[in-house]
Image (cartoon, one colour):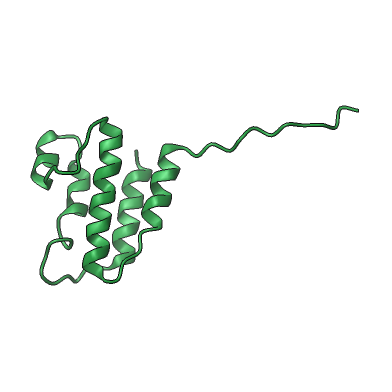
Length: 101
């Protein structure tokens, strides 16, 4: 009858997967959230670069010249003693950065 159809699998793009990962980050406190956000962004950047960037410092990333727009997301407040940062705003900025790629 011609009524049979096959649906192609839904494929999630890298960007969609990265954004979903960022939006799913949860933590007990603000500092932990920013450390997770920092680690996740390094994983994403590493995937884009095709190499492990997990041990790269912000200075290393900045010196590469490729990730300067991301560096501000990775510094404060993840390692600051006291943070005035907003968790939702930090995640939003990370998502915005990834969306711009």
